[in-house]
Length: 126
Image (cartoon, rainbow, N blue to C red; front, side, top):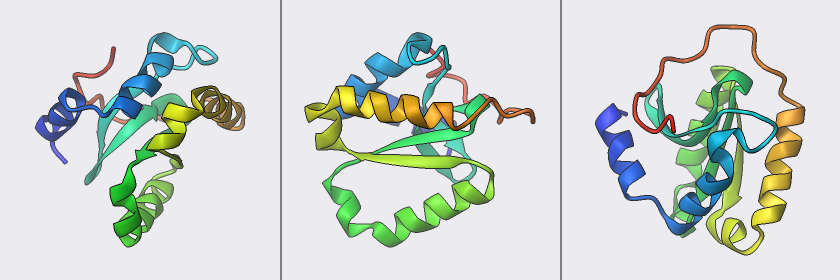
C-alpha cells in the first residue's frame, strides 16, 4: 500500500480508531511510540509500535466477511517478525480501559527490538 493510501485512511479514521489513538499517541502507554496507518509491505496497519514490532488492528463488522484476507495479512506480518493483536471496533468503544490494559500487557511481552526499524511512513508520526 502506498503512503497516499495511508494518508487517506488517517483522514477517514473511524470513531474507534480516533478513541484508541487518543491513548496511543504521545507515548502514553509505557513510553512506547506508536504511529497510525503505517504502510508495511503490501499492507497498511492501523497502529504500529515499531521498536516492539507490535501491530494493533481495529476490526469493524466487515472483517467477519474477510477472515481469509485477515489470516493472510497476519501470517505475512508474523513472517516479518511482527505480532498483531486485534480488537473489535465496538470493544474499543465500550471497553477502552480493557483494551489499553491488553495493549500494555502485550508491550511488556515485547521488549524493544534490536534490529533496524522499518522505514518511516511519513505523516502520522504524531
